[in-house]
Image (tube, rainbow, N blue to C red):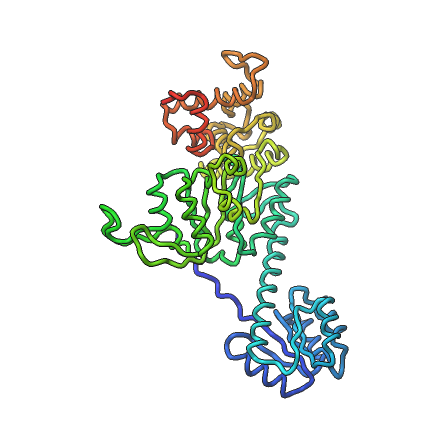
Length: 462
C-alpha cells in the first residue's frame, strides 16, 4: 500500500489596503488581519505600487481617489505588473461613475463608503475565488505549453490539444462532465486529469463501473447500507458516494446503469443527498460527478433506454474522445512511451522502434484504441531480443490485418475491417481458453465491450 500523502496547507491570502485616510487603513488592517488574511496597509499610491512590483498580493483593496495618484491609472499599472491579482475599489458617492468605469477596465468590484465589514469580507472572498481559478488555469497552461503530455495523457494531435484546452477550462469549475468515446480511449485518465486540476484534487477520486454489477449491488456499492438492511448486513457500510466526500465520483460505463437506478442517481445529483439501503435518514454529500460511456446516449434516450433528464444533468460539459485511428500522428509518441514503461517494468534496456514497426502501427485499425497499443508494445518489449523492436515482435493477427503477413485462410478482398476485428477477437478468445477476463486484457478492451462484441459474433459463444 502506498503511503498516504500529506495535504498541502494553502497559503494565507495576502491583501493590501490602500487609502489616504489613515483611520480607514488602520481599521481594515486590524479587522481583516485576525488570522484569515495576511494584511498590509498603505497611505501612499507610490509606496503601494512599489510593494506590488516587489511582492504581488492576491488582492488589493484601494480607494479610487488618492492624493498622490490617479486611482484608475494606478490600478491598471498594478494589474499589468500582477495579472493574477484582483482589485476592489472603495469609493464615495461622488465617485461612483468613476468606479463603474474602473470595473470596465479591470477592477473586480467596487464598494461604496461607508463600508460594512461583512460586505468587505464577502467581496474579498468572491475575489479570491477568481484569483484561485485564474492561477489554476495559468498553472495548467504552463504544464501543457510546449509539451506533448498532460499528466498521464499523451498527445500532440489537434484533437488532443483541443481536449487539453477543454480540461484547462473545465477542471476548476464545479460542474458535471460527460466523457464519450470508444473503450480504450482514455476516459478514466481524462476524469483523473479533471479531478487532479480542480479545487477538489486533495480529496478522494472514486471510480465505479456501472456495468459490472446487478441493480442491488450497484445500490449497495454507491449508497451503502444500514445494519440489518438485509440478510448478512451485520454492520453499517459506507457507500462510495460517502467515501468520496469533498472529491470526485467517476461513473464509468454510465450507459449500462439500469433505469431504476438512473432515477436514484438523478435524485442524488439534484438534491445532493440520499439514503443508505435500509436507512431512514438522508445523508448529505458534496461531490463532483464525472460520467463516461462508449455508447451513444442520445440514441439511448430516444429508445427510452436512458433517462433524458439524467443525460442533461450529466452532460453540462461533454468531451468527445477521439479513437486512436483519428489521431494517428500520436501513435509514435504513445508507442515510445509504452516501450519505455514496459522496459522499466521488465528491467530491460529500452529498445529502438524501427521505421517498419511504426509504419505498421500507423496502418493498424486498433479496435482496442490506446489500451490495445499499450498491450502490443508491452508484448513486443517482452519478446524483443536485441536493441531494436522488429516486425516479428508484433502480434501475428495485427500483421495479418495490415497485410504485411499473409493470413493462412485469406479473406475475400471485400471483407471489411470490422470482420477482421471480429476474427481477431475470436482467435484471442479461443487462445485464452474462452477466458473473458484474459481476452479483454490482451485486446485492451473492457469485459463489457468484449461481451458485447462476442454476442455479435455468436449468441452461443461460451
